Image (cartoon, rainbow, N blue to C red; front, side):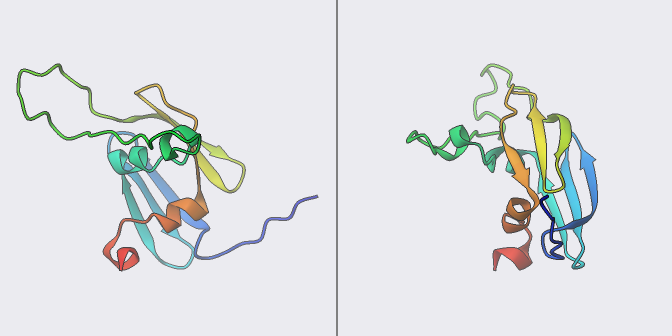
Length: 118
């Protein structure tokens, strides 16, 4: 039997999801993280996106095209989110990608707030 140890810095107290805006997490230690959709997609931890297979890591530019006559590119958004055990979230993206599993440890380590960046 596997036991799960709690860690206030990497255990979420509350998770709020907006499929078009991102994920907000209140951690048990009182910290708050906001993860914008494009940021989460670019931080996908799967082997393809990180370059773990010896390939170049995949990052996508979600900014508006410089040329207004370029083909329309729909904004990235989350189609669905599923919990994975008691330790992670799996996100299904509108670009067809769904192999990344975002552990709570990973999410806390990539928190984009000013406090965590410094």
